[in-house]
Length: 126
Image: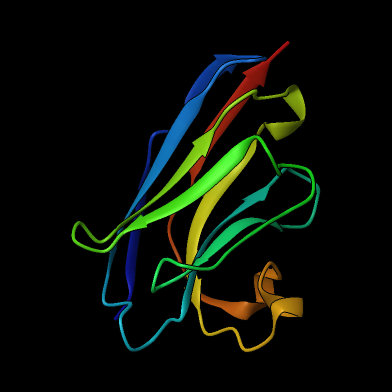
């Protein structure tokens, strides 16, 4: 069973930084990608960044490229999302997720992910 537990959310002013962490277990053999997705109330969940479980391949949504960095420490079973230059539009609930993705077209699509954490809230004020 895959278990994903997020931490690190909080409130920050625009231009600031936060680092999200996701403690993952049970994902080896079940997931080939781990990722961060987010949801704003009233809007659909969207992919932010994903990383292969080997840690070598990453994908980013256009809206966060150059500002966010996803990384995976397999020794610690932890996925990180370093978020810099945060904008009010980044305010959302952020979820860690795992899944098996077979094409790059689906690597940021929420329905590609079968296992989810409970989420951590990020609030960016202007």
